Amino acid sequence: MTADYFCDLVYLLDLLLVKPRLMFLHEGFWVDDPNETKKNYMKKLQYKFDVISLTPLDLLYIYFGTQRVALRFPRLLKLQTFWEFHQAMDRVLSSPYVVRIGKTLFYIFYLIHLNACAYYAMSDYIGLGSNGWVYDNEGNAYIRCFYFATKTATSIGKNPKPEQTIEYLFMTAAWLMGVFVFALLIGQIRDIIATATRARAEYRKTVDGCSRYLRRLNMPVALQRRVTLWFTYTWSQQRCFDESRILNSLPFNMKRDVALAVHMSTLSKVQLFRDCSDSLLRDLVLQLRPVSFLPGDLVVRRGDVGHQMYIIKSGECCKQTQTILYRSRGYSSLFALSRNDLDAALKYHKEAANILRLRADQLIRENAARLVKRKQLEAKKSHEESHGLRHRKMSSASSNLAEGKKTRMASAAAKRRLSAVSENKGVRASLASACSGVRTPLPTIVLSSD
Image (cartoon, rainbow, N blue to C red; front, side):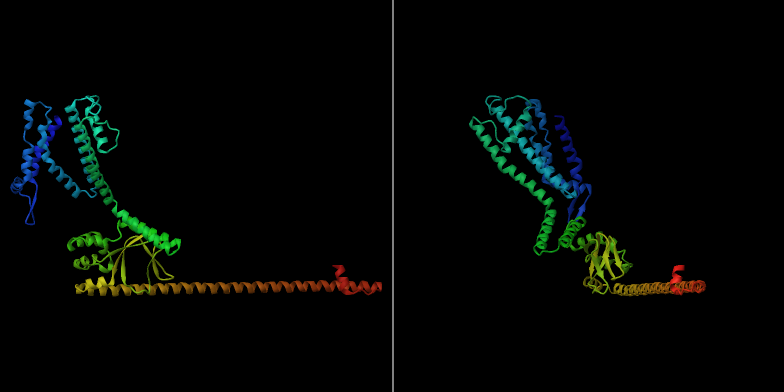
């Protein structure tokens, strides 16, 4: 009874302090005046139900006793407040699926509770423990009856066999409730879960369809992996593949506000659009399309026709000087703005168009000057490298000449010494031959002397 009276106190505070102060919409304006909100609440049918629900029938406990819980039946008229609470939670929460599942589970357990109460009342009417079907009045009555009602509602089986006609009628009604009502509630849970995972299911369906198409065309495995990787990265960043379809379901002003909240901070940092009017930026944010690039993907190449411009949101794009093109270094998220969309927006902003043309010309001149300066530096560096190479070649040639000269001089000196030695030995050999009377060839004497 303590819980009953605590709930009565909550209902009373809701009747006196909460409901009379709720704002309401009148002719397009929110009315928050306390007197007006109170009058509006008292005009509603819910006010009558709230008053009737708090009828103090509990005073009849004095005469009938506290077992007559049917005296609290008017409290069920507060069911509308329960529905309003769940509707408010569904609007406020960013992910209301848990609340929806909880509400459906509450209905399931409440119906089982009613079935358990009906089973106990039927057993009490027939006689507790009078046969094998009724409650035998052993153990905890509520738990035993709730267990019986759960098995009956879910059609698990192995229930006690009814013996009387009224018992057959009760079991038939309980089974029908389990077949239709519980099937309906469980189907609602399935729909809630399917709605919560619908976006991911569509993503998987798109990825699988694209993968089958690439396999059917016998595309390279590396290309198939890059396509799958792009799908994965885009899903992790955006959670959808077609943002325009979602935004197009909103009114124009609301769609522009959403686009401003998402893209304005990025667009305002672009040097080309700096100091432009807010009206132009508001028109441009509606035309930005998100684009994702994987590591190594080609973003733009110098000399290609510029159909659109890219604004880097996250990531980094590096320039390759050899081929004058830009590639994504890692995973990059960019915004694409087409030329047609830019021209359409500038059609209604003449002053901004002139400013953008002047700024674009200035950026082009600055880029051209940087390019010329870079080429000059490269040419100077190349000239210095070639001059250094020639200097090294000349130094090497001079050193080779000096070494050759030294080698020739050393060779000539060696030859002169060898000739002098040969002449001295030849004289000695001639003298020896003359003394002996035998003529010996000079080379043999030279070789033998050696």
